[in-house]
Image 1: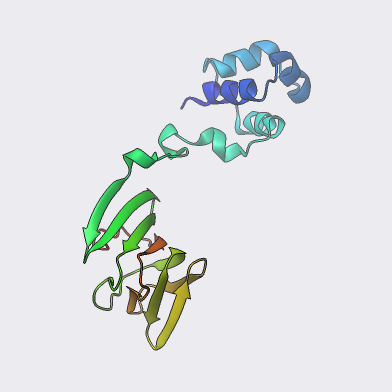
Image 2: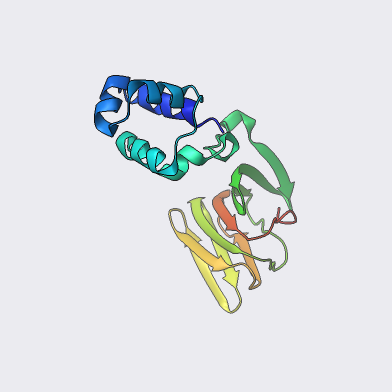
Amino acid sequence: MDIGSKIRTIRNRKKITIAQMCEGTGLSKGFISNVENNNTSPSISTLQTISTFLGVPLPYLLLEKKQHMRVVRKDERTYSTFNSLKIEHLTSKGGLRMMQVEFPPGASMGELNAHEGEECHLVLEGRVQAEQGEDSMIIEEGDSFSWNASVPHFVKNIGEGKAVVLISIYSDSELNDIF
């Protein structure tokens, strides 16, 4: 683990000197230097002292690089199509996926669909009809809705122009068969 360089990066970003860190934590300059250079492995108690002083949660210091924030730049996003829908895959983390779906006028996601997980939707543009079980609602720009995805559901653009919906799906398992 590269905890030391992470501590140094945070300290430098916050413009904290080693002397200030020594004063704030009670740790010696040599010890902090050894920690930042990964020459010593501090105890959990010492890491807690450092994380408190730096104003970051202790677990953050213990995360591996691949667990840090992931950025997907606009020009790096992937796209797919399904039933004339354009699906822009925005980002994912574990069992959470976020996508932006463009529905041409009259387009829908097809037949009623059910799968494991939870879904949240935000209509960014247009007007859609959302159906789940016995419920049917007209959802307009700026409105949001959510549901348990294991109950059959359906979304259709009922407006005259395109509809754009931001969709977040969470599931405990990998969902490869949705869009």
